[in-house]
Amino acid sequence: MNAKQIVEFLKANYKIQDKFDIAFIMGSGLDDAVPNFEEEIVVDYKDTPLPKSKVPGFKGFFKFGKINNKLCIKLTRYHYYESGDISLVRLPYEILKELNVNIVIMATSCISINKKYKTGDLLLIKDHINLTGYNPLIAVEPLDFIDMNNAYDNNLRNLAKISGMNNKIKLKEVVHLQLSGPTYETPAEIKMAKKLGADTISMSTAFDTICARKMKIKVLAFAFVSNMIGENVSHDDVLKMAQLNSKNLNNIISQMILRI
Image (tube, rainbow, N blue to C red; front, side, top):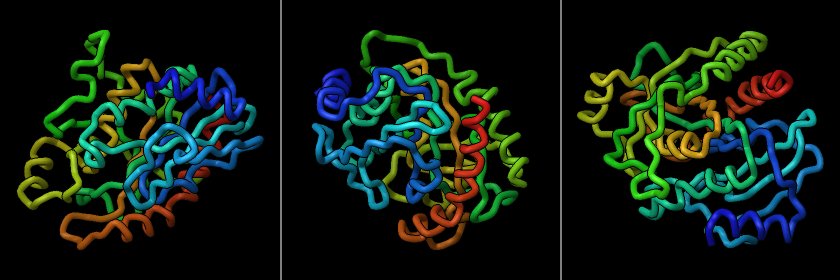
């Protein structure tokens, strides 16, 4: 099923709205970073035509509702490495377009390759490097050449920094690099990323942002440092560190929504 058919299915079976203001797509273990919804409707992906996410920590569901009278939707991303099907990576953003979403707030757990940052830091992505060797818009019709100069919306970033300061959190801005995964980075790949000017690395976010900008959705993206260069890492470690920092991100997002 395509995005339009999935939205029609959701409207017919769950009586959701036609238009939403803000969408949330969170990374591993960061579900609690999204403020509580009022009048919420939760729909598990298994109860829809969508495939379930294969990644531990990604529960695969829609949540519809309100936060401070803003109509909001939370959904789960797909990673390219899950299936090798790039159309699945695009699908959540095509759904958001069908629901007339204006803004998407996303987050990713990442490795920091910049010694200025440490495990547990919450960062703000200002730009990205797509080093996957692919682009999720290849062969998508109509063919568009998307301007990526302000891919991570400057006004939203400024609002996030103000909300961070109000919560005694200084959000530093970084350049994020995406590799395809599912392997973690080799020492040589880390050296290359540093020379290219990257601060953080994960297996998502560049693709997500490209897809959102294709749909003319404004993007705000956070990077949560789950580990540093040279640290032994497992997916369980990523989930534990993300859960510890969800409260800070929740507070920042709650304040932002009052001003959006």
